[in-house]
Image 1 (cartoon, rainbow, N blue to C red):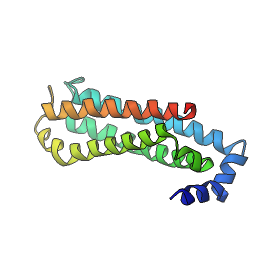
Image 2 (cartoon, helix red, strand yellow):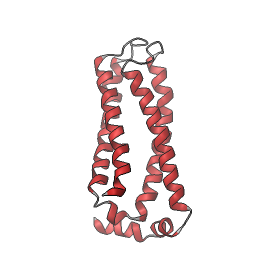
Image 3 (cartoon, helix red, strand yellow):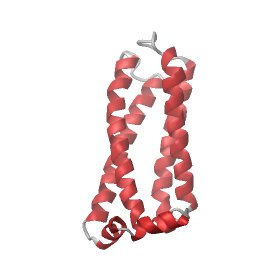
Length: 158
């Protein structure tokens, strides 16, 4: 498995990311911009699931911000892969990076649980306080994605 990460690092992409004074900083900025949009959209959706903006219909509110979150997540994945390619063999050994990946899986599992279970419960809840399952999902989401962002910033220090 380590050979794959070393091969990625030694690939043309890895070398370009390390060797360019433009590509790595651009990917880094895109990762931060993606984080801002992703976390902003997540925070707004989770705030609604926790009961904020209760005068706004839940389903269309979530649907609108979900598109922003999905686009921002795509930016995160692409820019994150580009950053990773520059030092893949070292980063994959970083315990904070590994924890970040676990947290991302947990965050995506929370999204899947929301889509498969909780979304049905909020189908009839247009305005007002969302059901308990929605509030739990929102609190878990806000916590997990905050921890992902914190882990991402800490990778450089470990």
